[in-house]
Length: 599
Image (cartoon, rainbow, N blue to C red; front, side):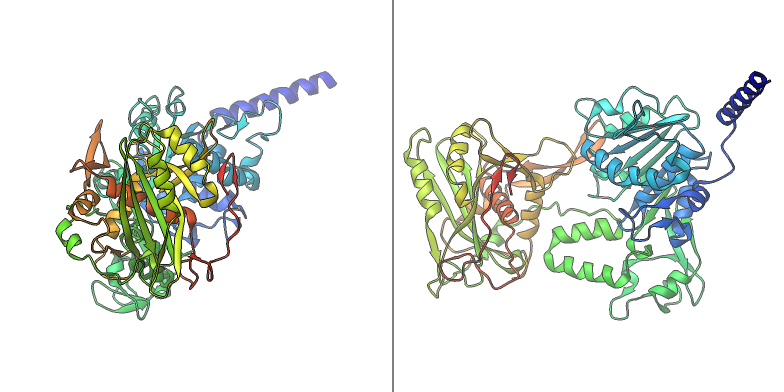
C-alpha cells in the first residue's frame, strides 16, 4: 500500500512538472507581474518594498510592449532618473517567473555587466520571493548561478560586455536586453558591431524580443537615436489642466521664475504638481513603424523635481559646453550636436593679453605637461583659477638629443622653477603629466619614477576603441619593471573639453587666457586647433573621431595633458586657498602610491 501511494505521488509530481513545462505563459503583462510580485531592494531604491507602476505611470506602456506580439523590438531613449534600469529588471523577473527562455543582457563592458549583476540583479533575485527559489543560491554546489550566468527552469540569463566578442557568440537567445547601447564600442574586437552580433543570436526564435535602452550621446553617432527614429517615436504627454490638450513636457515651455510650464495650446501656466496630476498617455509620431520607440526626459520623473532640473541647467551653463552636453544627454534625453566648424585661430591669437606679472592674481595652482619628441621636449605650464578658468603661463621648448643627459637635466630644472604674482607670492608646479609614447618610453618611466614625490607622472593616451567613451582620467597602473605610475588618458574626451573651452567667449568659468609672448605665437594657435571632430563609419555604424587638419598638434596634446593633470590633482578651486610656495600653501595629505596606482 505504501509503495502504491509513493508511486501515485511520484506520478502526480511528474504530471505537475510536465504541466508547468508545457503550459502557456499566464495572462499577465510585465507591469502586472511587477505590481504583483516585484520587490525593490534597499541597495538600489529610495523606496524599497513592493513595486508600484502607478508611481511612474509612463512605465506601464513600455513594459507591456514586451508582451505585444506585433513588435519584436522595443527602443527606449531616455534621460537619467526615469527608472529605465528597473524596466530591464522587471522584464528579467517576468521571464524568469512566467515566460522562461534564454536571455542575454549586454552592457557596454564586461566590468559593467559584472556590476549590474552584483548590484542590481542579485538584490532583486534575493528580495523577490517569486523568483528567488527559481535561481539556485550562488554558493550552492553546481548551482548554475555565477556572476555572468543565472540558470532557472526553462532558461537562463547570460550577462555580457559589448567589448568582449566571446560573450556575444554561440548560444541562441530569445530575449535580448541591450543597455546603454550608445556606449557600446563600434566593434567587438574584430567581430564587428556588438549590437548586430547580439541581434543575430535571436534569429532562431519566432517569438524573439529585443529591448534597446540608452541615454543618447552625440548626434550623428547615437545608436539609440537611430533606432528611435526608425520606431513609432512615441512621447509621453500630459493633459493640460486648463484646456485638456495632450502635450509632451518641453524644456522650452518651462518658466524658471515660477517653476511652471505653459500649455502649447492655450498658454495657461501650471506648476509641476498640477501637470503630473493630469492624465497621461503615449502619442506616436510614426505609428506605422515596425518597432516601438519611447522617449522620456527628466521632467516626467517622479524622482527628480523641476526645480532641481532647472538648477542643474543653470550650473551646467556656467561650467561650459561639456557640462551642457552632459545635461542635454542625461536630463533632456536628447543627443548633443557637436560644433564641427574649425576654430578661428586668428581670433584666438588676437585675444592675447598682458598679465602684468608672471602669474595673474586669480591663479591658484599651476600644472605642467610635457610632450616627448625625438629631438626635444615641448612643455606648457598652465595656471588655473575658480571655475577652471585657465591662463597659459609659458610654452617652452627644450632642444637636444634625448639619448644624452643634458635635455633631461634641463627638463628637471625647468619643472623645478617657480613663478610669482604681483604681491611676490611664488608658485611651483603642483603636478606634471609627461607623455610616455614614442621612442623614449623607458627613459620617461625612470624620469617620472624618481620624481613621484613632486607629482610628476607618466601618461599614455587611449584612443583605440572606436566609438567607445573613455573618461579623461581612465585609470592608473604600475609599469614593469620600473614600477612608475602610468596614468591612462581618454584623449578624445580631453580634446573635446579643450575645444569646448577655447570657444568660451567671456572671462569666467572655463575661459582660456593666453599671454602676449612666452611662446604663444601664431604656430602655437595653429597647433592648438590642429584637429577637428569628424564622423566615420565602420560596417555602417557611425562614430566620431578626432582627425588632424594640420601636421603639428603638440599644443593641443599638451593642453589635454594639463586638463588631465588638474583632474588628477583635484584641487578645491572654489576656496581662497592656493598652492603657493611658503605661506598660504594648502595642506594636503601625502599622496601614497601602490601597485594599483595613485592613492
